[in-house]
Amino acid sequence: MATKETLQQTVRELLGDRLLVVVSNREPYIHTFSGDTIECQVPPSGLTTALDPVLRACGGTWIAHGSGDADRQTVDGQDRVAVPPDQPRYSLRRVWLSKEQEEGYYYGFANQALWPLCHISYVRPVFEERHWETYRAVNEIFADALAAEIGDQKAFAFIQDYHLALLPQLVKQRLPNVVTAQFWHIPWPNPEVFRICPWKEDILDGLLGNDLLGFHVRYHCNNFLETVNTIEAKVDYDRYEVTRRGRKSAVRPFPISVDYDEIDATARSQDVKTEMERLRHELGLDDEIVGLGLDRLDYTKGIPERLLAFGRFLNQNPKYRGKVVFIQAGVPSRTHIGEYKRLNDQIDDLVEELNWRYGSGRWKPVIYLRQHLSPTTLMALRRLARFAAVSSLHDGMNLVAKEFVASRFDEDGVLLLSPFTGAARELTDALLVNPYATDHFAQAIRFAIEMPRAERRRRMGRMRRVVQENSIYKWAADIITFLARLSPWE
Ligand code: F6P
Image 1 (cartoon, rainbow, N blue to C red):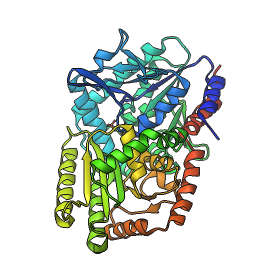
Image 2 (image 1 turned 90 degrees about the horizontal axis):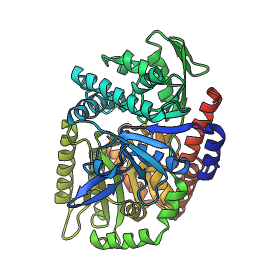
Image 3 (image 1 turned 90 degrees about the vertical axis):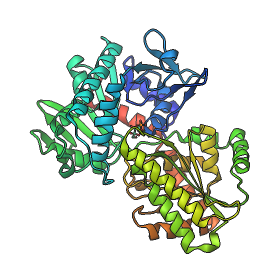
């Protein structure tokens, strides 16, 4: 089984003196002002949740956009800060962007064009020339930062996600010998969908600068190969390889995961136990059965669908009124974009409606915590829950589901999981719920609540073994091992 220690060994053996540089848009630690003091926050991001333990184990440098309002106050002369702040293990190098750049690149092309294009959630992508131009310019900024970081050293650049689709090609133009891999953390659509993007060929060219391109599941690799097949390129379906203009890129699935051991250990801590008590008191919980939703507030996560299903459940099962509460916790995200503002309003309206319709006396069916919560509080919430609902309309993987499983060392708790997540392919003991099918979802909630303890233990035990076996260390070791085989470091 891959562990932190075996990953360290793999990295030592295979990377040798080669520098490991991770590049992403989102940074793993964000410094913000809280009055006169500076706080350090961990963002609600699957990507950073997954990669921070890897960098902690292996060291190296992580280049990312410095998005916190106190980020500039905490870096040195080279824009670096050692992280994690309490026990530094690697270096975070921040890239600065103007408001205009952030608007066009992050809020514009990345999150109004590529995000809805890659997720089937029926939100129409917006393709604006000015967004695209800024996206290109910002990818150049990241390429310059990466080139400056690497200089003439031997390096392995590990690029993350859809914000940086052009970066691999730009890096190869600057430093042809750098080995590059990229992991695409979201789904890849079929060619029929992708072809509406006016800059589809530029994006494919950017990505084909990679020596290795990874997706969560084979289905997304297949979609990618099919998409590449629509341009002038040689696609080898047997070897999962693409050759374009004489360059070869391998395409493979690597299902991402979490640090199982760390989550399991934290979940057992006294701090979490104390926090569970504090939460029970603060939220006015007696012995109600707790359902839980934990998400970044995004329209792909199926939050309104989940609340509607919980309402339907209360409507059809009056005997559970007063006996079950659903805690929906989440941090607002990308609120600068209209679609996200509308989502926030929709959730507010639904919570108000459910609490008005079904609440009585002190009991309210939904507790909505729209705020940033500490890792200890999040862990305590997972442990309080009888069931957790992950109801994404579409999701590359979804690490909330795996975090829930890893935190339930008591082998209790039921996971309701959308079949439209990558996680559903591995967590086959979850109760599958189609977020679009409200009645079926409502029945699944009842089924979860009434599931006998022995059955909960059996299912959770099996899911825990899956997550333990396929932890984030296996994911990272598999990618590094694959790359080393592909391009033996001289
Ligand atoms: O996992 C997909 C992803 O978009 C990551 O790239 C990102 O860090 C995370 O979701 C959260 O989104 P954002 O960085 O836009 O807050």
